[in-house]
Image (cartoon, rainbow, N blue to C red):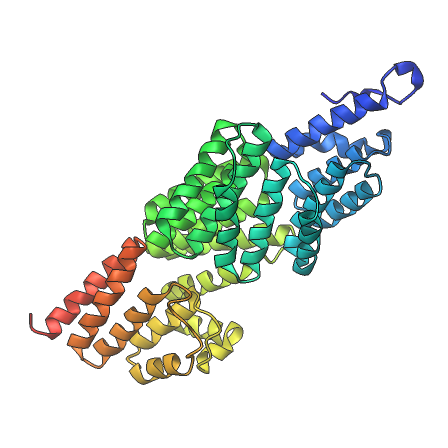
Length: 422
């Protein structure tokens, strides 16, 4: 336990500054690893009793970062930077800045990554910086480069069992799993998320269990294994609740809401999505807001009818109704399906032809593309063409193990066979 709180730093206490630094360093590391920031409240309450040390403000910044208070975190890290003595302290501050700026100021992230690239770094921090570099490439739209950065690093990584290194290594595997999940490379995603989970469990790093279970939930949602996805998101919520990690809890509710939509429980989905929004509102964050709005529109379209869905589009996606597609997301996909249900093949064809900039192969959406082409053919009663397009859609769905889509395609194949009198 930190001795500093029992002291008024009178020389008669015989506690040296070295002891205070050591206690703070141990406390910061344990807080960072475990995520138990609520138990660190006494540090905030008694900060004025602690000497002006790098370790003081670095610890305060860590606590604020875990509390998701980025303004106070950045302020504390900047004060810590003024007290930097060693090269490692400088690297720790740069890494802390990167963690904050990844959520607030992306151009500044690259600035500190470039600074770190010119320094000699211990292995645990080298892993952390490489991981953040990969995340930077991902958020700036270069997912292939993000994956290559980590894969190249892992290929040259020597065997290592130091817990600090393993802690950072698990985070790297987690991020790589997410990158592969985005590309719908299920096998690779499963492997790296599994490695991350096993390391964090082995070292009892409970702070990240909510994160990893949410990532697994998302991976299973992509495969259409909906009940398993829902179970993982519930585990994520449980672990995040233990540490009061608001953002992780909100993501768990979002994943549960998406699962309920796929399982047809639209009222429960609406309740979960609203709870997600309330959590993010409570910390003044707009993270996940777009996803919540899109999924709420889908849920309410089933509860209240397509009129609500169209009203939502007019308010939030007016360009889509005018035929402009900026990206393929769940809401956009539903608009394609809506036009199919409304028997509007001409509008569907125009939507595809007027948005030739969408490269379905590059964004790993070939399955959706061929599905839409099959729906157009079905609407036009060209059952042979619809059947051929469905075969292609099925092949791509099989490549990413999308069981939900495969089940839908089998139903559409039945319609084709009826049309072909087979």
